[in-house]
Length: 85
Image (cartoon, rainbow, N blue to C red; front, side, top):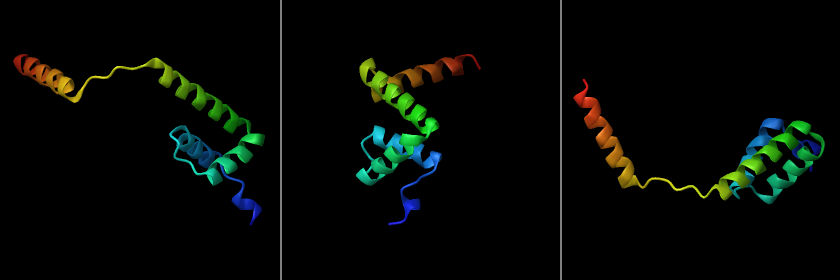
């Protein structure tokens, strides 16, 4: 195994961090991210912010509109817009 396969760029580390957030990263990718994170302050800060964002989104308990409700609102908006044109 070459050493260069263990060292990744900052951009690749950010991509792997995002994949980790959605449980899509492989264990090999997580290992490479961990190595990069151990010495790169930029990656450390990105991972910290990403983890905080994930935590806030999970705690927020968002209630989104259903597809039907969005369609009705869009229809009403278009009707009002047509009246004013």
